[in-house]
Amino acid sequence: MAEFPITLTTTPKQPPADDTLRFGNVFTDHMFMMEYDDGRGWHNPRIVPYAPFSLDPACCVLHYAQAVFDGLKAFRGPDGRIRIFRGPDHAARLNRSSERLCIPQIDPELIEESFRALIEVDQRWVPAKPGTALYIRPTIIATETFLGVHPSHSYLYYVILSPVGAYYAEGMNPVKILATDTHVRAVQGGLGAAKTAGNYAASLYGAEEAQKAGFTQVLWLDGVEHRYLDEVGTMNIMLKIGDEVITPPLNGAILAGITRESTLRLMRDWGLRVSERQVAIDEVVAASQNGTLAEMWGTGTAAVVSPVGELGYKGERIVINGGKTGALTQRLYDAIVGIQYGTLPDPYGWARPLGNRQAAA
Ligand SMILES: *Cc1c(COP(=O)(O)O)cnc(C)c1O
Image 1: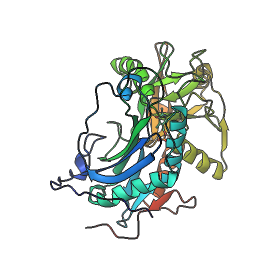
Image 2 (image 1 turned 90 degrees about the horizontal axis):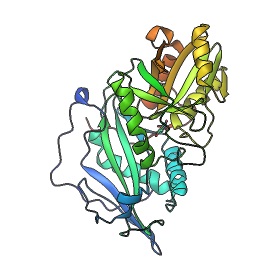
Image 3 (image 1 turned 30 degrees about the vertical axis):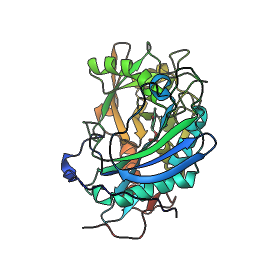
Image 4 (image 1 turned 60 degrees about the horizontal axis):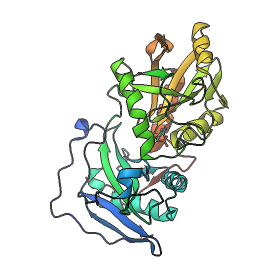
């Protein structure tokens, strides 16, 4: 186990009460930092008090968006133990995102250790109320000072932590999503499969339009024909038509969600018929009309499993399962959350407890 130098804050804050938590607006007392320079590699890993850092106005990430991040969660179970959900998988994905953005790889064990060491320092910030978690945000930004387009010669890796409640104001209640045939998030060959800052900038305009029209998020269709389902803003999309569960394949334009993979694994182990295949928006509309569209839901770390109660497309509103959470959606949510909080067995080894220590009371 790596040991990192730790500088503790002299002004610790009071964590907010669990039932006041929202998403991503409160941060803990410390952060993890490490730099990269060509020739030296990654160096100087350390835990320091959470604080702003300064960047040169010509810092290349501010101009050319060479940045990647990931997002995962740690949970405090009723047994008091803290578990990180699929840390090694998130570390591996951060490196895959980095590769696409010409950012140097980090030893995946070091990434995982950065999560564990930081959470250990800030463990009193891990909330306990069901539905809450500690969100972990590892980020890499290009830090060289230059104007001109080439991969940076220096980087900053940092990790911040945020105690969070439900991602959507709706909680586990169904969300409304709008399929847009005007805006596009990503195309095959582009950056869609990388968790990179620019993808979210690209999504803002369409998301604002959807919100103005009364929807929670956008359902992105493919960038060429505007016909096949890609994914939702921060979630992969799944639906059940008849007895077939369908989710779009990893085609290079969508993010390879770890919650997507977890739910696919569960459903296959439950013996369900699961297809990773293209699904056209017309197929969804037709299934709704002939009564076979049973359920639709999104998957993602932030919301875990989020039922879709309504789908907007070309001025029509399709209500799914009476606007209620479907049985399979609920079953998936319960199964994943049970593993995350340690209230169900974890046959896949997804939720690794932090150290052996019991949480402080
Ligand atoms: C993070 C993210 C997801 C969900 O991935 P998880 O690993 O399940 O959290 C899906 N789509 C996009 C665009 C994302 O950024």
